[in-house]
Amino acid sequence: MKLPVLIFYLLCLAITPARSQRRASDGGADSLLRSELLRISRLYSLDSAALARYDKIITADREVYVGRIHNITYSEVRFTCPPDNKLMALNRSSLSQILYSNGRRDVFMPLDDPRVNWRELVDTTRIIVKNQKDWMKVTVTENPDDITFLRPLGEVEARYEADIGNMSNEELVRHAAIILRKKAAAMQAHCVLIESKFFRKPYGELPVVEVTGRVFGYK
Image (spheres, rainbow, N blue to C red):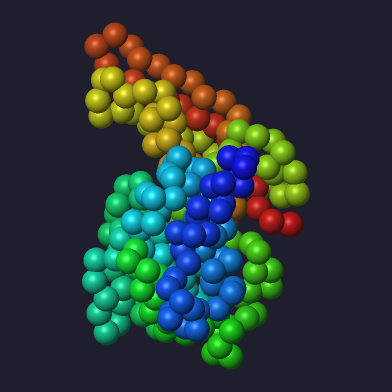
């Protein structure tokens, strides 16, 4: 079995709930989860076992968050997401469902519920980026083929200085990519194509990377 196919198969197993819980889910939610888990596995080089340890949140707007839930109150759910594990919060009324790492699923509002505002879901195969808070949905790539069918929205650049002297170039770029994704999300873009990377490590100073790229969105 080829590696990409194997990864997809393992991810499907990782997010499949117990038989007794399947009636509480809908196919649209599971499809969204598979797509997001595949994206995250490629972005952060995580295998299915690592992804299975995270909780998965789906909103009524078909937004997907993968992280760890800290607590759920009457009005909101609080959670952290990789890679920076910053504490985030969502209004409980916006939730569709939560799939916990132990396999339990809580359904607040099925995606096929009439209360869901479908006017915002013109194309359900696309990730909706509304503002900078949606930066985790933005993809960073160096492959021009990934933006073939997207429209250009502008340019972005990022500079990241390491906090340790032995940080690898790969880790520098990973941190810079977070900055690029946040800037792209502020432009409601969906993808960043990296065009240049410049590494510097002056004697006695911390290593620095400067990255430039172009941002793209759906047509």
